[in-house]
Each structure stands twice: as C-alpha cells, then as structure tokens.
Length: 292
Image (cartoon, rainbow, N blue to C red; front, side, top):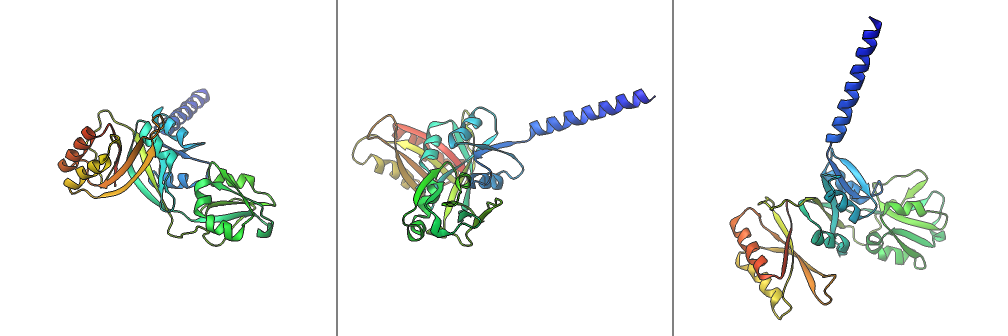
C-alpha cells in the first residue's frame, strides 16, 4: 500500500515538473541589450510585460537571437530626441530580415552615479554608453571639465568601473548597493526621449500589417533630383513624412541609404500604391516596419 502511495506521489511530482518545463518552454521571449537595468531592458519590459527577457551583449546579438529562433521578439533603440538616429540599429534594420511592429517612446532620465563617500572633486573619469555621455555633454563639461570620458557597451556597465576617482551615468531606475545617484536629471535637455522598436522575424511574403506609421529605407539613383522624385511620390498621395535621415551604404562609397517614416496605414490602398511606386523608382527598397 505504501509503495503504491510513494509511486503515485512520484508520478505527481514528475507530472508537475513536466508541466512546469512545458510552461517555461511556452513562455514568449524577447531579446534586448543588457545588462540588467539598461534602458533597453526597461523598454522590453514595457513592450512585453509578461515575456521572459533575454539580455544580450550587443544589439547585433539581440537581432541574431531573434533570427535564430531563440526568442520571439527583439527590442532596439532607433532614435534619440537629442542625438538623432542610433546608427548601429538602423544598419541592422536595413541589413537583417526583421520587421518592426510596435514603437515605444521612452523618457530618458540620466543620473550621475558614484560610490558612496566619493566626492565630485575627486572624479577623473566618467563611464557610460556613448549616447548617454553625448546627451550629458554640457553637464560633464561644466562640472568635470578635465575628466576623461570612456564609452561602455551600456549605461549600466559603467557601474562596474566605479572607484574612488570615477563616476558613471545610468538611468534613474537603476539601483545598486553602495552606489549613490544624483538627485537630479543631468541630461542637457530634460525633454529627452529614445524611440524603441519591437521587432519580429520578417514574414515571407509580407502581409498588409496595420499601423499608424510606416518605416522604410531606400537607395536612389545617383543623379540630380533623385531624392526629390522619391519624396514627391508620397506628396502626391498626401502622405506626411515624419522622419528622414541618411546612412552610407557600407560597400558602396559615396552612396547613401535614406531612412524614411510617414504617417499612414500599410493596409490602405493609397499607402500601398505609394509603396509600390517607390519600390519601382528606387534601386534598393525595403519596408522596415508598420506600427502604432
């Protein structure tokens, strides 16, 4: 009798373990730049609240994990309101088989981080991500004119370099024992936002996704008025261009790829008409996303 009870208990425990493993395997996953506490992780949590977040060492790794099927989505920053496009991420959008389906503007609140007991007068070096240092350049020049600035792969990584003569720049949401954050936002402009995109693997063929905004990149012929001709396609359809910037095409010196966003629903006929015309007009054309 007792043997049967023990066997039954073992069966129940085994079934419970199997159910837990299946539930963990079924949980959706999203990749982003780490380490824990990065702005990218915060954005991923806000975009995918109940998903498992996979922290990566680089933006490229986050995208490769998506393409390899290890995660269901990836989150990348594409633009900052002070410094413009995040070039590495724009290049990844253009080069890899991904598609943006949702956008999140995230408020950036930078704080100076120092070890407890360290005084500002002792700071000789400031660590942080390049974007954060650039966004706080006036503050750094005013308070630490002689300090050396060193770029890290993320804002949170700067905390690993703190000592008696260094400081870091991290988000106000970051907390670590023994580290003191400045009471105020040190960004040069307090109205500082970074736009993040939620990416999925690109469907083949691409369907008519809905969204308030459409994002694409294109390369025009090298001749006078070529870009103007592309822009007029959208003017004729009365579509409002909300963003345009250029990046060099890596393997063609002197050739540039234009990243363009406009307000419109990809499912509407006039938007699809403009897209078809633009694709036929350009030497290279790629839809990058359709999102709210």
